[in-house]
Length: 330
Image 1 (cartoon, helix red, strand yellow):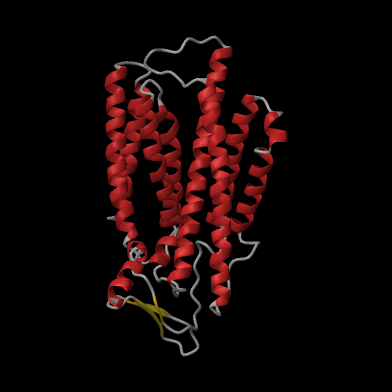
Image 2 (cartoon, rainbow, N blue to C red; image 1 turned 120 degrees about the vertical axis):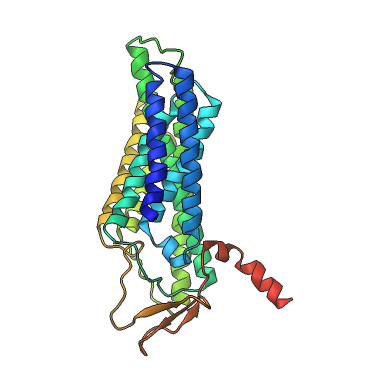
């Protein structure tokens, strides 16, 4: 059923891409409507799939690479729809959907290799889980911002080439102005830096919460995602510095936006294939963990294992955990 769900919205996105490409050849208005319709249908199916995954235990939802990439692909769709309704003559679907399909393939790579953990790791308390949620959400927003910057950079480079070649764009498919693409790329890069810094900060706080609670912090600077995030943060800081940014040509700025996103994809792909503490969960043979479905606690069959702790059943339960505790106290 899980594979059928992914194939369903992935096929809808592919159909939207097909119709958006066909607008260059015949019936531009009809093809544009069909592209938006298929994209909306795929987004609806994708949203149902993500909501179903949100019902998983929090540890499995946050520590699964398949969910990370599928949520990242899901987040690009409303941005594409917003730009499409804002500028109907621009084929945004042609530029957004290929990246969306690539991210879906990234997510399915972990699923096909059977990397999804079957047992949730021991919970670390609601405070630590809350910081972890903020950590993951911030990094997702940084990823989406940099993806939008890269797409705007590609559109800038393409439009600049067309203007240099003096190619007259058709009425059915026009690219946005160089000023619009350049401003979007610049603002998205700056926004990604803020989200990335906040994600690093919340990750440090989450690790500090583990240490203060008497548990070891599994993350080190040698972790592929930690190392890649720090390197990317330094690169973005250098790129957006006033001295370098003002000295670059607008076309070079667009190229840097694309390059930064390619570096980000490289780090993510490397983390997907390499062992790391974010996604590759390992269970020690001396402590077999079992999830009690009735009370939502995690128990261990080994006497030397970590004592059982109460865990939030899912992400939605974590968000409303404080409300439930306040009602009980009353």
